[in-house]
Amino acid sequence: MHRLTSLFGLLFLWMSGCAGYGAELREFRVENHSAEDIFAEVVRYAGTRGFGADPTETDRTRRLYVSTWRGGGLPIMGRDGGRRVRFFAKIVPTNDGSGWQINYCFEQQRIGEAGRDLDPEDDDWEAAGQDVAKERDFQYWMAYTLRGSGVGTGVEKKAGNDR
Image (cartoon, rainbow, N blue to C red):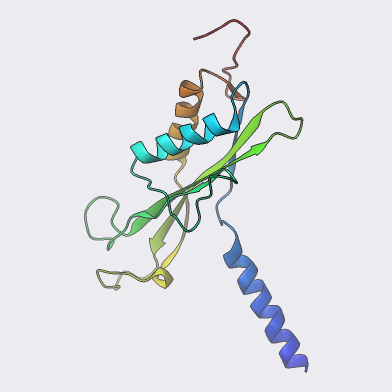
């Protein structure tokens, strides 16, 4: 019985580790826009950068966007070889109710073993942090396209300012 309890405990820890995103979510606050407009801008950004939606995880009603993995291949092959990236964004109400917050990240993975074949399986990939440059680009683009409404970026929208 003791071994069975230990096995279930180990299984629970392993499953809980697989359930969430390993990357740290960044936050970007938006005021004076609807959640639907913000989500449409997130989808447009992802589409123009080659991060197509993963139909099994993206949910418009929950304002959740998860892209498919982009990149891959062996470490010796060309640009982005051995690495892949995916985009995650979720729009949630702010704690104070004054607007919306985009929780986002660009999660990276790399091939754990250099000797893998040309078509690596999902088990061959391991976490490799976040792509901070892409996260900065996303934050800049959201502040620009949503007309400077980002709070915490040093660019806040003032009343009567349409630029």
